[in-house]
Image (cartoon, rainbow, N blue to C red; front, side, top):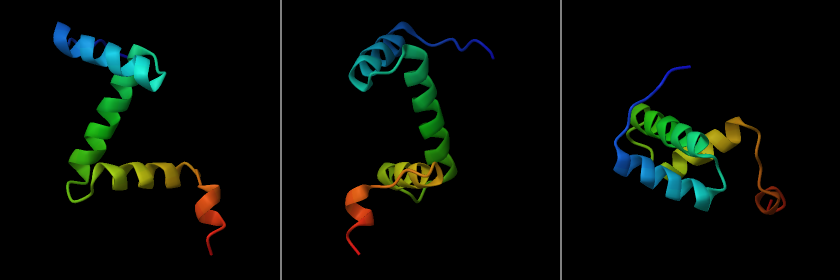
Amino acid sequence: MGIVNIDDELHDQIRRASSVACRSINAQAGFWIRIGMLCEMNPTLSFQQVMAAELQAAGVTSPHLANAS
């Protein structure tokens, strides 16, 4: 594990977002880093498509969608 230096304004934004998302500041920063990396690796996908793929890969399903067949 390493240390990442970020400016005070970005840290403040991470702190604010973490309270909304019920994450620690470190977890919020990690989430943004991971999603940013995934978006850069998949530039043709929208944020929603990246999130859907990650949720599906983690085995998360929507009960509503599972019953809609």
